[in-house]
Length: 488
Image 1 (tube, rainbow, N blue to C red):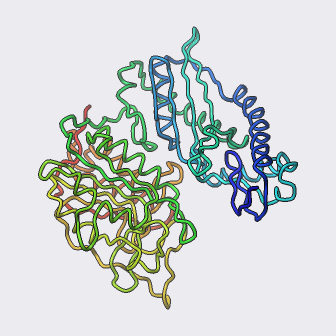
Image 2: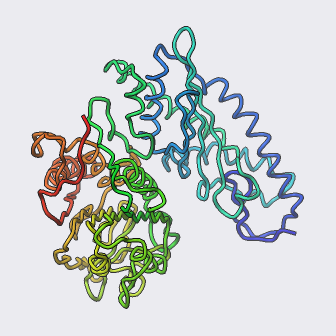
Image 3: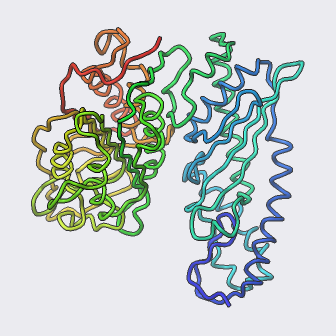
């Protein structure tokens, strides 16, 4: 007998009611929903999942790579010879939360009707929930006499406790239709751009970064960063804190930010995948295990670093908060009380202090977080007597640091690109947009000063235009330091 307060039922079905359902009833409900949705989804994919274009295979494949990046998904596998790409993203990406609200509105009642025989009155408490799921897409580009045929298939994969029960799951039918619509809109725009530029070479297609790049970061006419091939000792720590539970609003695009930066570190900073400490939704103990604590700096990162040989990169996307009592800046772990940052947060000052003791050859830190106590999703801490808590400014650090906003500002999100506004523009700059005479010298070498000028002009303007707020990146380090070289 299954008695629970929260039962995952298929793809994204969640029962949030107290009751008892036998395993037989539960599995039958899963089978019923799978069968019903598979029938509808198969018909949708036949009608809307294939399109023909007058283009070459090279152009079609390149358009698929760029489209995947634009809609926030990551390429897990690809093979140009067969025209195949397998891409993933945390649900509901590529849908937005407003898209998902429409899915809930349209598909919930039908879902309840399907499982009513097995769940009875309990089906009234069943709803659709995208968390703990991944969106999977198979993309095929096939040549024919008239050009190419592009086809797309969509599925879900469980990542929570129920993932062992079913590996591939049927998405809600409305989600499939909306997802296909978003893919085709982006694909046609990218293909039109490629055709206008006259890209016809498979070599050019292969040169485009294959995964994790945000919208706008790899346009056809833009130079591509050169991969470092002599950096086997480089180490990266990547943290994406998205799901904060009941303590405070989620950081909707933190996982997307982390995946995009991971791909950049691998492809263009030359970091070996085996040298990446890749973390999602981490608690305070996890952060201390990697970076150390106030008693010792010798955490996992210290064990991995080769003194005076390793270049170290740290990226964090998630909430930051000010301390009520000490006014310091804190990174906020998952499950932490934002109003007790001195107890539950990880001090930024401690992070910088421990990193500076690692004896790395170089250290570069990117923080897509703000420390004002606010976020695009709402307030993190309550204002006391109407007085805003403004954290103290961190003293100078002996390495390169870039953060998303000043102490009293909000780090905005780019809802279209589905990334933090800072991460989006930072990657744009690193992929070549900062190598322009407006920001410095167009010499295929992007310096810290040029990145700062790019962020001041583009990110700050985007925050003002889209949200009517101020946001200026904060940068520490040698302004003349070359961060990335370009391959024109």
